[in-house]
Length: 64
Length: 465
Picture 1 (tube, rainbow over the protein chains, first blue to last red):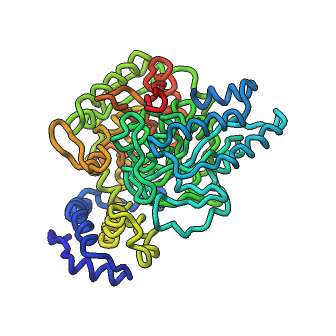
Picture 2: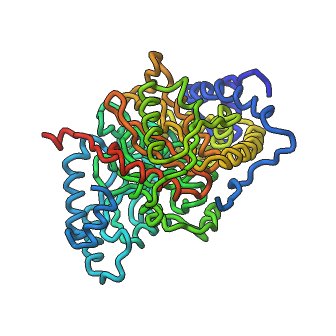
Picture 3: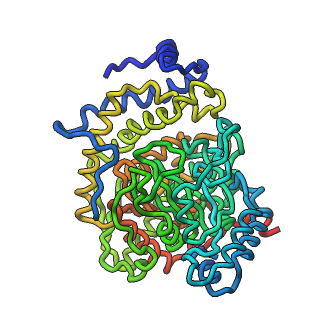
């Protein structure tokens, strides 16, 4: 994942593609979240042992 | 009076269901203006239902016969609008049927008093609803109640219902239980039906009880747990007799203390209260030792990686038509979910599987994992920071390391009151392996036989005045 964080223009366009039209103040608030989250999420790709399959829709169930 | 005590008094005809309802309605009338825990009260309906219950022959009376309870307002109660604490629902129609958990409570004989304040759409931990105003903490009405089930926590603490239901995605039962000084359970994911509950995240949401005591929560879970063929997220796992498994003590129970959560970014007084609580468990015969959980510091990130997409997906249609009707904080979170790459979700689901394997190993050596429920005191209403060891810290960031890890793997967590710091209650989290709620209830119940933190009640002005 790139270190580059998304601009307001990019976010506005990405929202419009999904039919959502937020005000710039709201996009700035979301950008604030993304600035913290995206670098942390980028690390996830390196954390998981190779060969690990995704969790199911609901994590496995078993009796204790 | 606790829920179980009240149920006993009702069974012994020391008071009638109508008298119980009238008592609570009078308390709500007198006290709720100070804490704003209720969104709506159904007084006439509750009294009529109490009268109908009185007509039942004793053999047909359930374990919660005549017990007044209240419900977080993201959970459907037939005939009432589920507001979710939001302006978005202003034109919504009343629910046509009860949520599965409400139906379960009614089958057990409980009476629904009303609907409780919530963080808007249960998507935040403040309970500062833009539509209904902030919940106020009964221990200090300038402080928040936590959330998202803040109304449920405050209502239970102020004894404005015998017990309440909340929902917990990533801490929303446990945080208000801790902040308001009551006991609260996040059940195992899949233990309780989510049918009729407005979702935050389909794979993390649970419905859980908040009440004064562990035994109260056991009684409420008993009425609400089990397979629901209409909710595919529920598990076909047998439901124990929670209330009859409370006794027997905890001699030999293996408790693992998460040392990394007792040190560092935590209020020292809170850590001290939890350490005292752990000492009590040791005196009660538990075998206590420290545990380390490899990768725990990443578990919150993994949980967030999957939760954002879930929540935004639920709200996407409304975001296209009513975006401005959301409060600013929820709007920002929902928008954030639009912009997180789909690959993050897949990575998160893989990491979630690995976290599950890690926790499975931890629980081979211990029966219960123990940690503080929250590392900070509730912030003042209107502020989004808290003081943590002399530094102003964003409140929302303090929540994740203490709550998200257990949600990530779908584990049950019981928060029990274990002391006070600066006059505010402190909660201790007891985490079990999946479907091991009985062990948590027994540990909490045993602890509450030798401590009285859970029995302390806030002195609201109208109580003392």
